[in-house]
Image 1 (cartoon, rainbow, N blue to C red):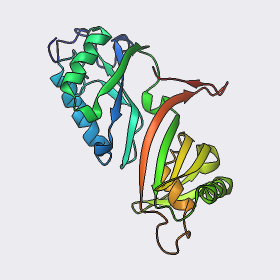
Image 2: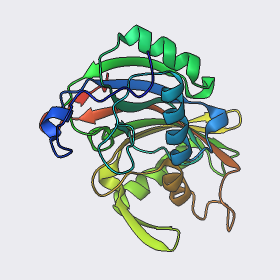
Image 3: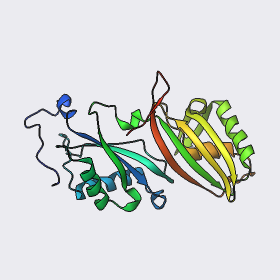
Image 4: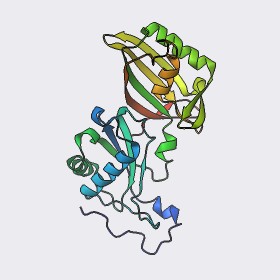
Length: 251
């Protein structure tokens, strides 16, 4: 395989989106390891772009001035979080066997961002970022100021309160926790409290685990934060069907 190959649409116009949607659309699942937890989303995107080029996949290039690779990513992870289930959709100029793609990508990608699975999906499917609306998380709250039972009650109080306001930089933001937090479980462990969270994203935003825990533990340790540090990992992503409520896996 070679890198960027001549595009198959010849003299097709840039606005001919129906033709672009016929290009093979490869969906790849990859991890973001613990040691890369504080690597920002843009840095992850740039790294994966370089890895695809090193793997010499026949990726398709956009018709715009910048001539960018046709690639879409799932919703950005919060900085400080790892994951076992991130995704990207890559448009190829020709179909390549999935096994061959995985071998090439794994050889070209750092272990902490290694792809685990891949498949071809419908070229007309919605964009990953908006389609994947459910996320499950594992969170370890190290040296938590309260036990699992109290933390669970505090999280429940935040959810029952409904809209939660917070600052992102200098801007005031808000999110309806009653809709964004589907379920939670807390358990005492040796070095703190372990949580399992199920969250729902929408056009109104996504609930970050750290934001939820910071609000839940507000005042639990006086002026202090209420814990030493958090370890956050996204463990699954899915699409929630608006009519049936059933979850659809991305692969």
